[in-house]
Length: 100
Image (cartoon, rainbow, N blue to C red; front, side, top):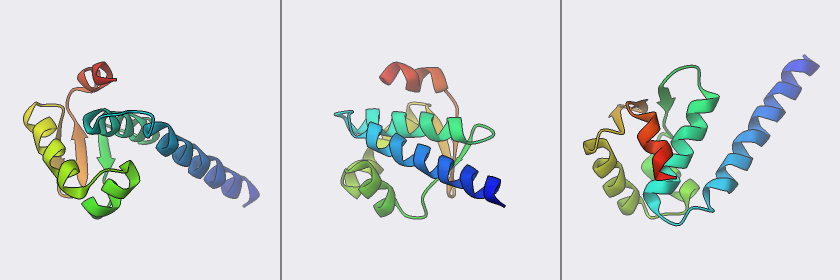
């Protein structure tokens, strides 16, 4: 049980550090790209679970909800990913890496 607890704390700390690092990027698409690539490293496949609301996600990235929504649509149309419900499916990880 102690091992599970320590693993949870390490995972949570790594996620929080990732969010702090995300704020170093100036543009919204860079913040989204960094967040997605970081979350992809934590997931088992190319499917990334999204926060339940765009407001929560926008607050996490320190951007407005409308700006986040607009940039997500632009990036999805550009072929970086596809959003299906509350799951984002990465389509072009290399293109996201080039944004950074």
